Structures are given as structure tokens and as C-alpha cells.
Length: 109
Length: 115
Image (cartoon, rainbow over all chains, first blue to last red; front, side, top):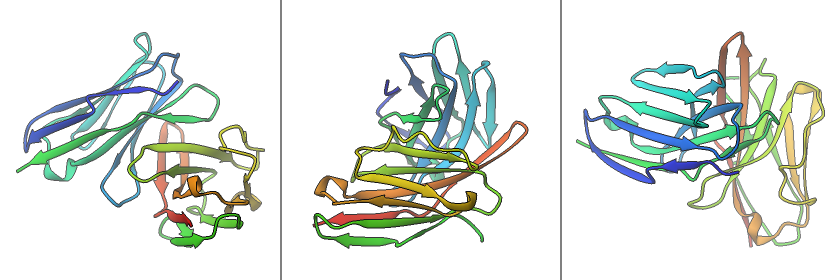
């Protein structure tokens, strides 16, 4: 049931774009996205509910494709502050959140 | 309070002892989550409280783990007869929903080391 995140790691230059995918083998009710910097607690980015919506947060947005059971996180014109590990958390309507293994993002100046 | 607070920030305990971890959520947040994160690993969901409803405890790793939330506010996570594999950072988060707006905030975590 653990969602699969891809890629596992990505290195970008400042200003480049990135997409992080989160795929589930089971029908999703909602997807949560978080960013965690080394040695810090995670920071909640956004939640997407089933319905195929897209949400935005600064230059970070996400989509939720119910048919594909997948969510994608889009980082545009990446900034140094975007570096960290991104986790998706999937919920199947039972109030439990199952997290992917994370995607490590490193932004080079 | 300004944010979610957790205490203690660090706890070192001997194998077999009981420990109690505390979480003070943001005032007015009706939902509270407990997670744990082992060194270098991802996030593991433990339990979720919504208001005064009884939580689903099936996410807790073993029957040595229990959690309470008193008065819909402060929560305690208790680990009995601690084992070395319980060593991790225990994170608490609280959330708020208003219409289609949802926000979730994490506390700084309690680092538990079982020796």
C-alpha cells in the first residue's frame, strides 16, 4: 500500500523545474505533500482531495489524477530554499496516512 | 501558543522502561496526528485524533504503544517496556480545516533513544 515516489533523488540548478510523482496501487481519497529539511520537522505543503484538483503554493503546485491513482508535485523556477526531501502521504478514506519513501531534491546555485 | 509544542525534546531511556511523550497542539485545531521517523528513514503514521472521537489504533506498531487525547487538546503517547527499535523521532502535528482550507503544522519532535 505504500505509494511509490519517483524520482528517488534529483539535482537541479536554481531556476530549473522539477516534477515529483507519487503513485498508488489503491484508489486514493487524498494526497498530502510535505517537505523536510535535514534535522528539521516536516512542513506541510498541501492536500489534494479526489476530484482531480490542482492546487498551488508559492511556485509549488500539485495535481491529483484519480484515474491514474497518482499525484504530481510541480516545482517551477526552483529556489535554493526548495532543497530537502519531499514526501507524499496517501489516504484511502480510513484516516491513516501512508507515506512514500521520499524524493531528495538538491538545488545548486 | 505560537505552534505545536512537544516535550521532552530529547529522551534517553533504558530498554524495558516506560516513556510518555507529550504534544500540545495549536489552540483550536481539532485534529492531531502522531508520526515517527527512524534515523534516515521516512515517516510512519501512528495514530490520528479528530475532536473527541475515539481513534483508530491499528496504526500503532504494537500493543506496547498507546495514545490519549484529553479534552480534545493535549495528547500523550506512551510506550511501555521500550525496545531499541523504538528509538526514533516522534512527531506530532495538528490540523485545522475550514471549508476547503486545510493546514497542518508539526511540532519539533521528541528524539527517543533506547539504550
